Length: 139
Image (tube, rainbow, N blue to C red):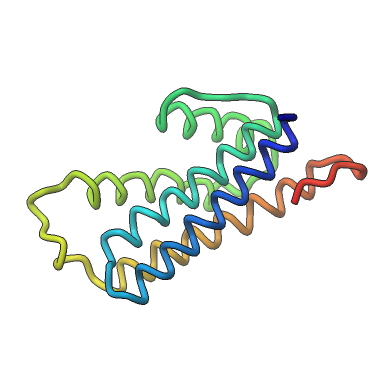
């Protein structure tokens, strides 16, 4: 698999997680939608790293590398980049905070998580188009 194949696969996975988040939201599974929204963002961030032929072994590593590669050394909007960390915090709460019952997650939290993931994925796709070579077919 080439690095461009990996980019395409990661964008596809990002889109799939976002679609699953939307489906879970529609079915009233808001906690799961929040977690899946994070993975939509996470895989989009990994696509940027794959494009730059960088990698990371942990979620924290992906966030750090993404901020270095796409924000500090490129033109990715910092306000959009912050959504990655926000989404990670929400996902950790959704997956591991047992003090909050499954039914306590609200529709608006889920809607906002999906909105943030959509914004992030859209910006990653725009960034990839701005930074790719004319002959590179990314997705």
